[in-house]
Amino acid sequence: MTHRIEMEGGGVFDVSADEDTLLRGALRAGVGFPHDCSVGGCGSCRFDLVSGEMETLWPEAPGLSERDRRRGKRLACQSRPRGDCTIRVRPADEYRPAVPPRRREAVLLRRTPVTADMAEFVFSTLEPADFVAGQYGLFQPPGVPGVRAYSMSNLPNAAGEWRFVVRRVPGGAGSNAMFDALQIGTVVTLDGPYGHAHFRAEIDRDVVLIAGGSGIGPIVSIARGALAADPARRITVFEGARTRADLSFRTLLGDDFSDAITYLPVLSAEPEGSDWAGARGFVHAEVDRVLADRFEACEFYFAGPPPMIEALQELLIIQRTVPVSRIHYDRFF
Ligand SMILES: Cc1cc2nc3c(=O)[nH]c(=O)nc-3n(C[C@H](O)[C@H](O)[C@H](O)COP(=O)(O)OP(=O)(O)OC[C@H]3O[C@@H](n4cnc5c(N)ncnc54)[C@H](O)[C@@H]3O)c2cc1C
Image (cartoon, rainbow, N blue to C red):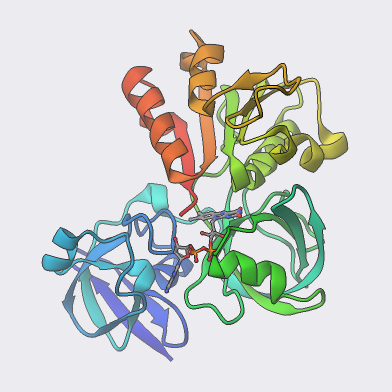
């Protein structure tokens, strides 16, 4: 059974009455519904309900401000239609899914430690792993309300292998359930792919990749994608981490590391007495120092915690006047 959603100003799509949120249903139908995180954090999927009934899954979701709530705004990623509805939203081509997302059963094959608090999860599906480098999937961690987004760290493949680098967040319900409640061999629902901060192979500029913490997963995927698209393309990777022991890019890329990659780790909390000879401080400051007069020649991809994303937006868009069309990022709420 489906519910019919009409968009004021033109366009209709159907949302499965089953488990789909308004956002997921729209994207499955190929509608360019504005969105970023899909998990209630960013507010990009705000819309107005004109008529009909919708259930709100997470009323306290931080993606809506108090002012939004007063004005009756809703988040499509937290709204589930209860019947046919009419909504007000402005779809845009840039949000149209590169690959239509869908649910599939995935079995957890292995979980390999990468650092003290991050592990690589490898899942397998019967169908090909169909996504673009840099996208993410949605999981329902066992026993936890809401879904969590995790970004693929490998490349699309016919064998149906999906890799994710997950950080165990202290006190975090979802990430701890991914580590503790998912046994090897467990079958889960993997919904995806989602996200538009994916690699653009057709753009011929130097590729600059910036990761903070567990943002390394999609950055490894895009580095692999850029190497596969053109092994001679100039790729610069900045990895921001607290200490040397938290770095993971070289481990994750393994034998695929190539001379085309300039790898620049930046540590924010490495003990003063250590023999670390690389950069210290925040990763955005190092990006500014290293790229100096090369900003014009680059396409930027970055992923990580919201403060890092905000610092990079300020640097790239305001200080260095990089056009927003050359900047692709995921905030890890
Ligand atoms: C696009 C994207 C890609 C990401 N990729 C990765 C990745 O590759 N690796 C990685 O380690 N992390 C990634 N994250 C972060 C990850 O999704 C989780 O936020 C992180 O694991 C912490 O989750 P937690 O449940 O442990 O922490 P918590 O603090 O318990 O929850 C964090 C998030 O869960 C959601 N949430 C919390 N409570 C509810 C609720 N009641 N109902 C609905 N939702 C709720 C919210 O989005 C919240 O920000 C990504 C996030 C986004 C948005």
